[in-house]
Each structure stands twice: as C-alpha cells, then as structure tokens.
Image (cartoon, rainbow, N blue to C red; front, side, top):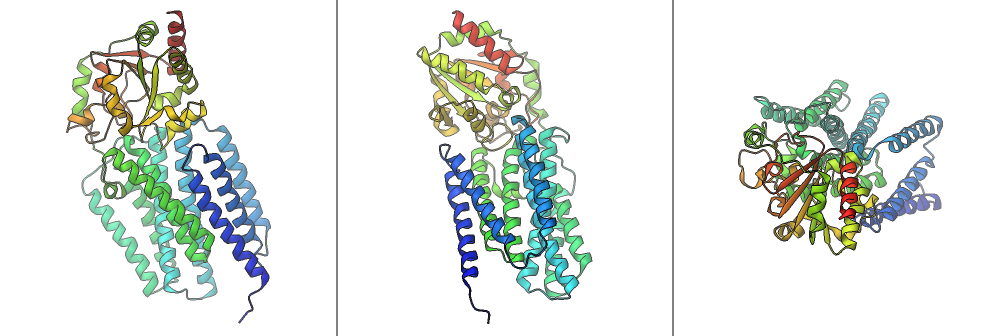
Length: 468
C-alpha cells in the first residue's frame, strides 16, 4: 500500500478549496450586489482545479494541453469581446453546447484508453461513460438548434410531424439499451459506442425542434443544466471529485432555474424535458389583431401622456436589447422620477432571449435594482398606472395568453399592460413577436405605437417631455 504523503494531502486540500470556491461563488452570483465577486471566486476555483490537475505526476506532456488551452482561451476572449448584447443568448447556447462536447470527448477518451489497453472498466465507469456521452451529445445538438432559432437561421416555430414523439421515445430507449449492452456484454464495442453518440445527437435535435421560439429562454436554461450533468458524469468516468462537484452545481442550478421559469410560464418541467410543449400554429389568434390597424403615436403624443403621468411602468423586451436603449430608458425614467413621477420596471422571467436578459441590460445602465419588479409583485399595479411604456416586448404583454385557448401562449402568465390607462409601445415595425402571434394589446383603444428604433424614439420622447 502506498503511504499517504504530504503531496497527496496538499492536492486533496487544494481540490477541496476549489470545490468550496464553486459553492461560494454560486451563492454570491445569486445576488446582483455580489455577482461580480462570486464570478471571480468561481473563476479562482476553476483555475486552482486546473493547476492541481496539471501538477499530477501522471501528466508528462504539457505541450498539447497548454496549446489547446491557450487556443481555446483566445477564441473565447475574442468571442466575448465581439459579441453584441443582443447575441449574448446565442453565445450562452454555444457555450452550453461546447460544455456538452467536452464531456463527450472526456468520456470517449477514457473509453478508447480502455479499448487500446485491453482493460475492462467497472460497471460504474461504463454507465457514467454512457451517461456523459448521452447528455453531452443531446446538449450539443440541442444547443445548436436553440442557437439557430434564436439567430433566425432556423424557423422559431415549433417543428412537429406525425410519429415524432414515438420515434423520439424509441431512440431514447435505444440509447439506454446501448449503454446496458456495453455494461453487461461488451464494454469495448466501438460500434455500440458510436451508435450511442449518433443516436444521442439526433435525440437532441428531436427534443429541441418541437419547442417554439417564445420558450427558448427555458430551453437555454435546461441545456445549461444538461451541460453540468454531462460534466458531472464525466467526473465519475475520470474519477475527478472537483469535476463531479462543479458539474453537480451547474446541473442543480440549471434545473432550479428551469423549474422557476416553468412555474413563471405555467409550463410543466416534464413537457420541457421531453420537448412536448409549444404549439404548432399561432394563426388562430392572428386574424383578429390583423383586422384592426395600430394607432400610431408621434414622440410628442407619448410625451404629453408622460408629462401628465404620476405612475409609470416600463416593460422592457428584446427590442430594448436590439437597439441598446437601456441607457436612454434610464435617462427618461430618471427625468420623470425627478419631476414627481413614480417609475417602476416590470421584468418578466422570460423577457428577451435568455434568463435574466433584462436584468443584465438594465444593470448595465445603472438602473437601481430596487426599481425592478417581477411579475407577481407588479401585475396588480397596472390598473392604477397612468402610462405603461412597452419597449420591444411582445409575447410577455400579450393578453391572448389569459383568455384565448387557441393561442400558443395560452396559460403563460403575462403583464396586465392592457389594464393601464394609456399604453405607449415602442416597436420597430408591424411584425409579430418571437412566438409568431399577433398581440391584441398593440391595436387596443388605449394603446399608441411609436414606430422606429427604440433608442432614437426614447431620446425624442425625452426631448419633447423637457419642452413641456
């Protein structure tokens, strides 16, 4: 038996510190005031875990490891520097996919190490290899589909065809059967291994395609959880405690966030996981809204309503991100607040294209966190609101979700903007929302639409307000 050395003790303690750093970092990232600090602590833990791994006596060739690490770091740095805030959800989706891919490579490398050395791994190693490959491959292709829907290169409408769920279920059973075959029959069967990889990749497409674009924020959150679970399974494969801990934390945090968002959207977690929600057609609600034209406001019209308002609620959406209007809306609201107006921001859990998208944008513009209200806390205030400003938000303000059972948004909690005295909508054009349905709010009698770039419109409105 090899004696336990001081080096072993230092290694275990270092990995323990890394694991604790992940936990503390995740805890601090749950609050806006400590989020930056939490991110730095988690990054420290990851760096420490990586350095300890490199210090392992079994690592003898550093050139390829450092080479790919530097290359990957540079690619990530360039992507992060160049990506626009409007494309951040797509980048998060890609990172989820990359994480899943890394887990597949780790598990695959361990599989082929056993094949080439003619060693027989234990059952736990085989099962966790299969789990890592399954979840990682689903995460990769599912993330690519989600990114395509967000980017607009793939239709955002749910893609459904006869027998789809049956084939999806059959494929899932086949993947599980393949893992069982490796565990009990032939752990070195390369055809079975690659069959699991291919079937899992197709499964990721089949699970994500039936989900409509309006529900993509929930999908991104779920795929983030999958990437963590894949890493956790890979940790069991290579017997890395720090990978198990970090993967478990990501997986658990992602699932918790997904459940919260499902509750906010009145969706079932089981339906999200198995790709069974998202209606195939939103045409049933489009006709009624199309029959009535939108009433156009000029910036002066909006300014007159705002100058007389005492209670204003702002509902930001993806259009705010597209026009980078967060600074402009803050300046307008700050001016109104300084002149006796009570201003609040209504933040929907799925506004934008990823969880927390609006929170990030408004924090970037230094909007006080105390002025942000979630749906449950503010929905009762719209009836006493003089003016509701909707900046590029569509699906989260659609009243059809409350009363139209034919709408694909039916059952999703939305803001009661239509109950405000006046609604001012800032909108780029007359198109539909990401879910592909018309919004009756935009043609309501108490609604006026200011067409154009939201940032320019807000600047014009503020200038007009100052003249009144």
